[in-house]
Structures are given as C-alpha cells and as structure tokens.
Image 1 (cartoon, rainbow, N blue to C red):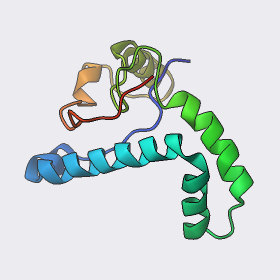
Image 2: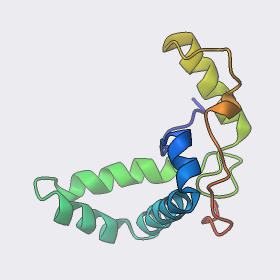
Image 3: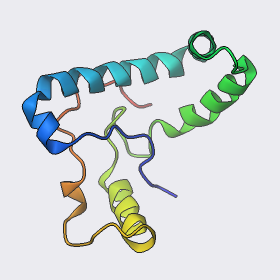
Length: 122
C-alpha cells in the first residue's frame, strides 16, 4: 500500500515559533536514516548500545525491511514523499480512522522543513 510511514509530527505553533530548530531536527533525522541505510551494521550497533536488551540480529532484520521502504517509488530524496502516497494515506485515514475530510491533505504536512541537501533516493 503506497502510504506515508515514518513521519515527524509537530504542532504548527511550535514550528512557527522556531522553524530553524525543526529544520535542523529534520535534517539530522534524514542524515541518520541515510547513515543507517548505508551502514546498517554500525546503525544496529548504535541501537544495541542505546537499548542493550535488543538483539543486533533483530535490529538488522528490521533495517532490512525499513531500508526498502525509506524511498517510495517516485521519491527523489529521503523525506520527499510522492503526492500519490499522501493522497492514499489521507483516503485511508479519513475512511478508517476518522480524520476529518474538511481540510485537504496538504494541511496535514509540509515539505518546507526539508533541507535542500536531503539524501537522494536511488
């Protein structure tokens, strides 16, 4: 199902109060995902160091799945989800989870916080 998965959620008023902070957070998050997809072994070591009860093999198995989903078909960079995916997500959220239909999907997300240097999708 071509929906939006991993997301960063923030309140509009907080973003307006300190947009630069949120831009930096988004950029750092994308750099982290890019590093993890390029070197999943090191990323798994970092996860295990933070959460010692987690098994490295489990983290690597999760990365194997997540890495296939980081770039949706048609995406040009990490974090830049194709409009069709947002539309499908909106359709499902309004139909099954009660998200109000009185606003367009574009009211629920922004690409304005994405850095110009966002890692490219293959």
